[in-house]
Length: 372
Image 1: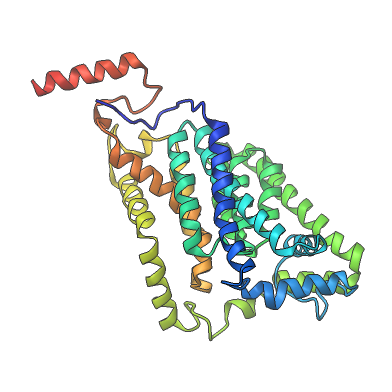
Image 2: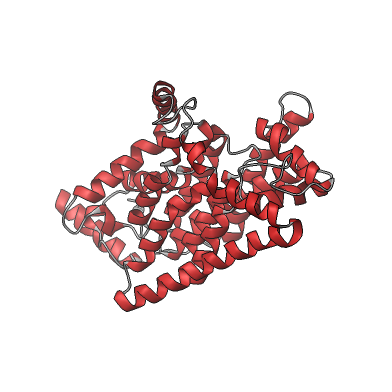
C-alpha cells in the first residue's frame, strides 16, 4: 500500500517546479493582457484612472504625491509604477511583472515548506494558490501581488535584518502588509530566550527602518519636501479616512453589503477554507502522538496566524481583490488538510523522523498482521 508522508524528502524536479510555477503565473496574467489587447476587456479602473495618469504626470515633470500626481499607495509601488511607464510598454511590462511575482509567491510557499521538511505540502500549496489567484482578481495590475510576495519572502528568510527589510518593502507596496508583522515576529521569537529575543527584535526593526528611510529619503532627494510630506500623508496619514469610509462594504461602513460580499467570497474559496478550517481544528483539539501539528513539518501555527491577520483587510473593505491577502496562507493550510485526508496509515507510522523503506515495510507488515 502506498503511504504519503509529511516527513522530510527530496524532490529532484526543483527546476521543473520553479519553471512550472512561473509559466503558470505568466499564463494567467497574459491571458488577461491579450483580452485587453484585442479589446475584449479594459485595464483595471485603478490603472486607467490613477496609476497610469500619475506615472505620465511624473514623467512629464510633475512632482510625485503632489496634485495631479497623487495616489494613496506607498513609495515603492509608485516608483515601480513610474519606472514601468518609462519603458513605453506599460501594460506589457506590468502584466509580465505580476505574472512573475505570482509565480514567485507559489515558489516561496514551496520553499518555505521544503526547508522545514514538507516539500509536498508546499508544492500543493503553490498550485492551490496559483489556481485560486484569478478568482481574487490577482491577475490584474495590482499592489497586492507584490506585497504578498514580500510577506512570503520575509517568512522564508531567517536573518532578522533581512526579515525586517523584506516586510517593510512589502508594506511599501501595500500598507496592509503590516498585519503580517506580529506573526512574522512570533515565528522566530518562539525559539529564542529573552536576551536573544531582544537582540533579534532590534535587528528586525533596524532592517525595516532602513528600508523606510531609503524609500522616503529617495522621494525627498528627487522631488523635494512637498513630495516627501505627501508621501508620508498618503502612505500613513490617509488611513483614518480610508478605514472609516461609510459607503464601502466594511464592518463600520455599509455592513449589509459587507456581509453579502463576505458570503460570496467565502463561497468562492470553500475548497480552501473548509480543509484549512478542519486542519486548524484538528491541530487545536487532537491529543497524543498522532496530533496533526506533530505529523507535519510545515509551519502550521505561523500560517494560521498569518491567515487570520491577513484577513483583517476584509473588515476594512470586503472587495474580491482583498481575498488575495490571506490566499497563500489559506492555500498552505488547505494543502496540509488535503495531505492529511489522503494520507493512509498515518497512525501506524512514526510521527517524527525520516521514514525509511525499512520502516515503511515494517509498518506494512504490522498492518497485515493486525488484519489477519
